[in-house]
Image 1 (cartoon, rainbow, N blue to C red):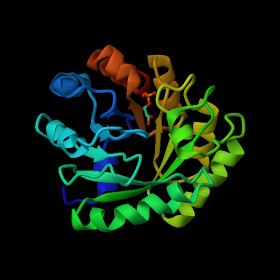
Image 2 (image 1 turned 120 degrees about the vertical axis):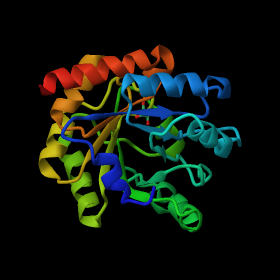
Image 3 (image 1 turned 60 degrees about the vertical axis):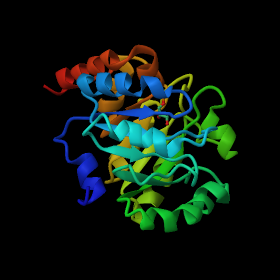
Length: 248
Ligand code: 1GP
């Protein structure tokens, strides 16, 4: 994949895309083929790979196994500089801008940068904003950062605008994997109205109505992890159909 990664990921029409997160710590190797194929058939357009806490050292093999069974873009969404693989098609080069922990603002990125360049991985500079979602998530705990309060859209907007001024090419609004509740549509809407860069929204989306609400509020991509692990590609299909119906 040699094109600009942002164009590749957001080339799709106006419709909100459904991306599926594959977390090496919760998806058994023997289930990769089945999960990837069923998500693909359901209408997923991108696979993200990563997790805030990956305890095993088979990350590279995990990415290679996914690449072996799909033609869709396989994009790293690393929780740390250890989660890199030359088998991927690109990387969300994230900075945890909502936090004030230098390790996740710039430290891990400095560790990763020489390897990302040596691997020739296309990178999309992405602002990662954690939004409070009911209980402490792994992302909050591991990063040791405070999320943005879910009833303070102005704070989310200011962070996203800072990202835009930095030249970042996407904003990822994250409730956290398995979040009690997803990013509120009011926050998505305010950020979408106040910035000109694409929004990725994920964490805690378990119903088609939540996915449609995120789409209507302005998400360009919705990321589903836990619900696909639990319910398979059929859930991706439900979401993709529901979004398409609303956009007709
Ligand atoms: C986490 O946004 C993703 O980074 C997906 O979250 O597992 O809750 O779908 P879920």
